[in-house]
Each structure stands twice: as C-alpha cells, then as structure tokens.
Image (cartoon, rainbow, N blue to C red; front, side, top):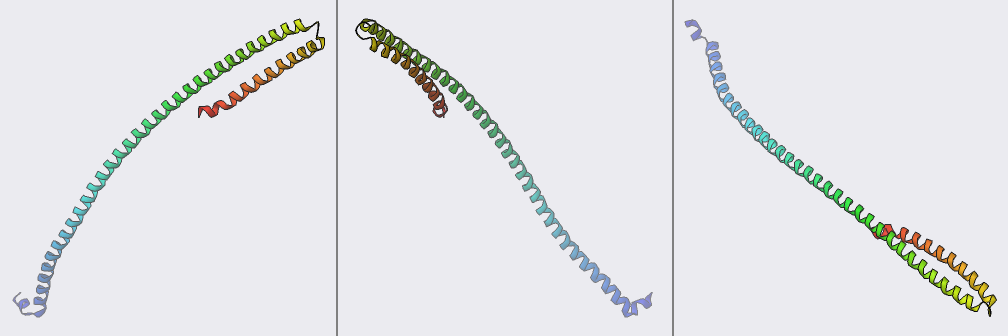
Length: 163
C-alpha cells in the first residue's frame, strides 16, 4: 500500500475523487436551491390557482343566482303582461258590446221615428214611404256591416295597443 502512495496515478485518482466530492457538494446545494425555488413557485401557482378557482366558483354561483332572479322577474313580468292583456281584451270586448248596443238603440229610435213619419206621410207620399222602407233596410245592412268592420278593426288593432 505504501507503494500506491508513490505512484502518480494514485494521487491523480485521489485528487479526482476529492474534486468530484467537492463539485458534487456544491452542485447538490445549487440543485437543491434550484429545486426548492421551483417548488416554491409551484406552490404559489397552486395557491393562486386555488384562489382563482374559488373566485370563479363564487362568480358562477352569483351568475346563476342573477340568472335565476332574472328568470323569475321575466316570468312575473310576462304573467303581469298576460293578465293586463286579458283585462284590456275583456274591456275592449265590453266597450264594443256597449257601443254596438248604443248604435242599435240609436238605430231603433231612428227606425221608430222613420216609421212614425212614414205613417203620417203615407196618404200624401206613398212613393216616399217605399223609398224610406228601402232606406231603412239598407241602413240596417250598412250598420250591421259597419259594426262588423268596427269589431274586426278593434280586434286587429288590439295587439298593437298591447305592445
């Protein structure tokens, strides 16, 4: 063994081993520091990702709640609009019926007046009586057609008024 101490290769090998041990020690510290820094960055990124996920879940819950509220409000508005439309429709129908009844009464009064005038003038104006009777028949048809057109027009205008 003492002979190994006198050989150059032994000293070179020993120096190389010591060099490798020192380099490994320094390299291991540098590697450990680099890995520790990377692990810290990864931990921060995971923490940030968890925080962002929690925020996203909160935002999602809020958006779902807003959507639910908006749907409820829209449904309530739609229901109210339907009720109002039904009320307006019923009121319009009542108004049309009342208007038609007034016109019918007015027509009946005119007819009664015309009949009285016709009876008084029968002796003197036989031709006028025939014309008046024809006029009365035409008047009824025109009033009936007018009433039908008014009802149709009121029904046609109803959707426009509802909007």
